[in-house]
Amino acid sequence: MPNRHSRILYYSHDTFGLGHIRRTLAIADQVARDVSGARQLLITGSMVAGAFALPPHLDLIKLPALSKHSDGRYKARALPLSLAQTMAWREQMILQAVQAFQPDVLLVDKTPAGVEGELLPTLRHLKTWMPHTHLVLGMRDIEDDPASTCAEWDATGARKLHTDVYDRILLYGLREVFDPVREYQMPPAAAAKIIPTGYLGRRIATRPPQVIRRELDAGNRALIVVTAGGGGDGFELIKSYLDARATNATLRDAHSLIVTGPLMARGKRELLKNAGRAENLSVIEFTPDLLSYLSAADLVVSMAGYNTVCETLSLGARLLLVPRVKPRLEQRIRAEALAARGLAHMILPDDLAPQNFARAIETALRAPAPQITLDLKGLERVSHALGKMLLRA
Image (cartoon, rainbow, N blue to C red; front, side):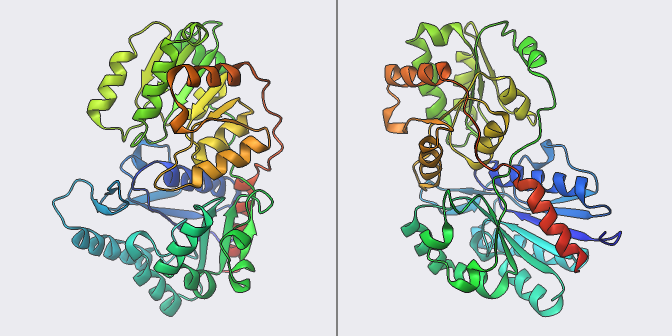
């Protein structure tokens, strides 16, 4: 077993949604279960990190938060600082955390250089002064369409980091579903570092479906859960669902739970809450126990973010995906791959006219539950891989 003081540091750069922090916490929770004596530290910019239950022996450092303009540029979310001032502060905090914590493993979620390159000073320090630290990049199943990803990797120096800096690349997916080596033209030196883990499925929900149904007063009606992840760009999806529901008796007879997400603008969230006063309709802003609600659902309607997809598939639930198509095509590619395998239904944002959307929801609701053939044991494989690295630390 690893020694009693093995240390893992996680970097999760959330700025717009909840995906990175939820994925990282799921990994840390699995490691806490599997790796005796591991001590874990999470560095994150997420505004809601503290709302989630933390695994034992994990602490977190909250960086000054960023938000993203519609054109993809970052800015300080709340503080009266320029982007340059905010990034300099974040860089210093990350480097000081590494110097104090002295991790045996650093696991970076998705962005090899960090937001705006903020990890580069820390990576240089680790390679120079702490060469025993295993540097690991966690790559979700799909980054973006091949042309955009290749251009981004070339512009940010990601390819050199893949090849020369990181020791391992954990692929949170399967190359037979989407192969980043082929699609993103990864060189052999980087491809050799990839460990495909399968998808990061989740454990069973914490509360049984009957408890959730009683809480919502859903009775024996069909339960449809509509979730927009963090909610920063989820208003149109939820508003379209409510418009579709108004046109369709089957949907009005079902009980609908709307989860707006904590990052939705307050004015938009209030509009949806007012709509939630209708019969058979509940609206909540956020829950750290989303898995229990998904488990109780007869149908989940959501964007095609990595975590919600993995969670819903883990439960074997019916799933209707409305993928985000800008600024990235990642969600559309994922939704199309799952729909082609019969694991989910799909409708594009441009096709959400009320009656059209209502038909798609009704079709998905009446369809048989999917037969899950996707490998969803990724959390266990990630934990095993990190444990092996700790043995060598």
